[in-house]
Image (spheres, rainbow, N blue to C red):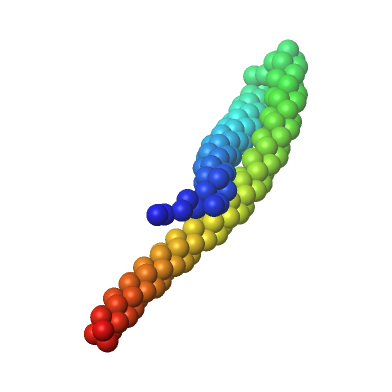
Length: 166
């Protein structure tokens, strides 16, 4: 008769914990990827804003040097450049915030990886214990079967010897 593994509940708990940590890691990887994509998008938006601002500045400078710019054109250009600079600064702050979120997400992913490693290690410990326990149980069963066989043989030998002495 085979006995049930006494730590079966713990074994199931460790397996469930490892599965939960795998899911958590998957979520953290996805979050990090989203945060990194947002960081790249914020960087591109800031770079595009700066490039547009420079293009307008160069065009305004060319119009001014050519003598075709009016005072109204210069005022309008200055207002645009000022607004573009403010927008670039805002986009820079957005990029920094996105970078912080990406770093935070990467840290959370690393912690999730560490938790998964711990959960897997705990699961392996219980699995190894189960394997060792089953092997010990099997050795015990074999030893008991051998002892029973020896006892039966001894009883038969004694019975034969007893019959032979009569």
